[in-house]
Image (cartoon, rainbow, N blue to C red; front, side, top):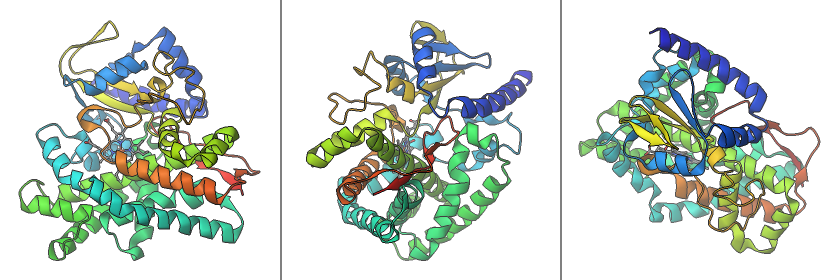
Length: 407
Ligand code: HEM
């Protein structure tokens, strides 16, 4: 118990300072850890892993499981992350087989090649509409006016949420999105998080009831059909997985779009290269995901004793896998701090790996491909505007609060 309380306190303090000190540029710290302490045991039984080979193996190792959420039980009751537990416990990412396997089977239909092809013209229309509005206005904050709304509209399509409820989705991603990051949630009381989870659950339970009467091809319909077959346990499981997908699919995609726009603006020769050769769009999106990974960190728990980089991690200990550090490991990526949109053999870990590897990966990549192709084509003079950009003070997530651009 004493250890648990120490863990809560240390983790709050650490996350707060981490956000302040390293969120602008975590890469020198990652380099130091990779070189000097590639497998670092913290006093509270968390192991920090930064090298590509170790991260790759841990993510795929069946002797590790998804993060055991009971580690958060000792957090103060007003902590945002602890308040998220009620949403996260039934969610796919924190389930173990066979529960994880059945949920993954049910949800996979929403990300099939056929579903994605149906999404393509919708994503194109969303990107064009947002850029039409920016061009009509004559100004753009690439976060507020492009990276934030684009994935909301895509998720709205994925779940067939009516247009009139777009504002609700925006409100929930704002209040719940940052809470999955300890550096952000440690600073915010969890009251707003709990309230948002309550209203979002009510909303998605009602939407599920409506889809039972009028089923479609969307993710909510797939979940209620799964429930009818006995593959989804309850209304709560339907609602929590819908909300989790909303948050997981928004935060990360928003950050990919903002981080990628900044990377292109800071590397204008690479942006021109992509304009001249649009066939490079797939490798450009992969390079953006490697270079400024939207999810820097994921967690695992050892279910058996395992060896990591020559050290022994006992069963029950937790692993902090820093994908953002692995993706800059010079032993895996030559010249890793260079942004190279044609980088060959770019098997980055931005979507993690193993059974929990991001289910939304093909959709996210499609969003990135359409968004960047459209942005660079429609705005050939895109450049940073005055006012400056700002990194979010986060640790798990990597993204920007604002990115004013001129075009
Ligand atoms: C650039 C965008 C994205 C990035 C970088 C990203 C990253 C990740 C990562 C790292 C994980 C795995 C965590 C782990 O293994 O511990 C994950 C899981 C997940 N992601 Fe994504 N994601 C993105 C977009 C999306 C989208 C668009 C959706 C859905 C619309 C989505 C839904 C999910 C879900 C449901 C899981 C849990 C999968 C499971 O546990 O089986 N993600 N994502």
